[in-house]
Image 1 (cartoon, helix red, strand yellow):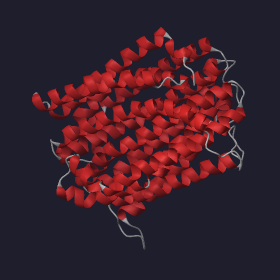
Image 2 (cartoon, rainbow, N blue to C red; image 1 turned 180 degrees about the horizontal axis):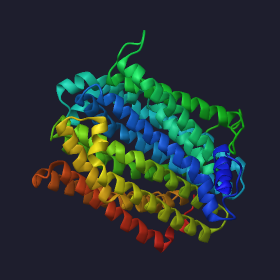
Image 3 (tube, rainbow, N blue to C red; image 1 turned 90 degrees about the vertical axis):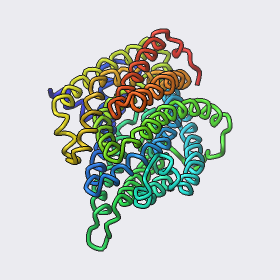
Image 4 (cartoon, rainbow, N blue to C red; image 1 turned 135 degrees about the vertical axis):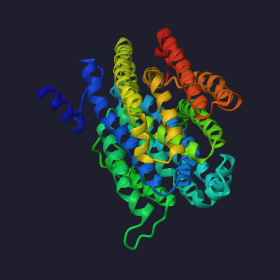
Length: 461
């Protein structure tokens, strides 16, 4: 126990460690502890946000659900873009080329800012049309359009938060990524009730207050990231010079990031269309489904943290010419993720009504939430396996393979099945949720088969 305690402290401090040699389990442990805690805070924020918003009204929760189904595209682009610096920086670090890693980091920041401007302008202008397209009522649009407009307008902090954390993860500085997200979301959680319900001179803003808290919290998180990078405290050190646009690096980043972004856009777009189907069942169904999704994310994101650790290990070990070690790292991480999510699924199956009622005890909301959460829990173990093996490709810089897998799993399998079961067969929320299980099953099988073929090991970045 003392040894484990020392390892946890070392991981949280961000002690330097060579992830290309020594014990693989220790390497996974050292990387995944801060990454799991990083994702745990992100998921905790999602739950806390849903809790305070739920106190406003079911329409407020529905606004968050509909908006975040679309803003997830921004998250998807941010996460997808971050796969490029993770893969390239991890390779350079594995090769012991820190100067090359720093050059990639600078160019990646240019790319993130440019993309955020491109996404933000239409999001602000067409915020009401976005909610209308998603099936929101005119009352919902009137009360929630400012929430949608503010999130799109401030998406640059979302983009930079994910991208800069990708830089830290690729370098193996997972502790800095953890601290940035804890700071951002910790402030967010504190500010949520203040801006949503009001306090002293601060008026109650309702659901708009949640967007204000998010923007402030994540803006402070980005400020901390820049402080670390420019202060020379981590592996990647950004100096005043060398900021000229490097079109060769931008081209290589763009090649990896484009299919990486499409990979996540494909997945996110499927969630948008599924939410559009759910919206036809009413605001209570949307609210219950949204709460179930938030609960699933709460326990899924730590496993996602483990998959991020896997991506870093793959990239650095391929850079160090250790392909067998990269393969073993992925297999060990997959088993760990499967065990974790298997345990969580048991709790969800047993205590489903209690989990949903904690957020909203409206009968119709509880019914929809319980239905969705129980079905999600049945296929929960598959999510972990699929996530780990997909991230193995991303860590190698092969973002094209998981993009193709996502097309087959989500657009060819999940979406048609969701419409057929939910609308045509009249199964409602249950039918849509079962289609997600089918899509995730397909994803896991394809990812595992292609992982075993090993072509990803030869990817050039």
